[in-house]
Length: 98
Image (tube, rainbow, N blue to C red):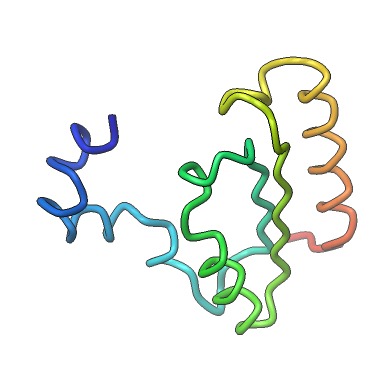
């Protein structure tokens, strides 16, 4: 689906794929970030780069994966409640208000 949206596979539309990547927009003004994934690596490709970039700027970044779930796990219990709990915990830890 992403290849259709971005005008081709990575090999054919590398510039668009890079432009669509959140990693390209990280910097010293990025907010604390929590990434919750399904444990399927293709859906969290680049997480190491995200963590490294944010940490280099002193910005909190956490990643949690539900290892054996479908990609849309957050729509269903028991995962929905667990996602909400993780988000609440992360927001409380950051303690930032704007």
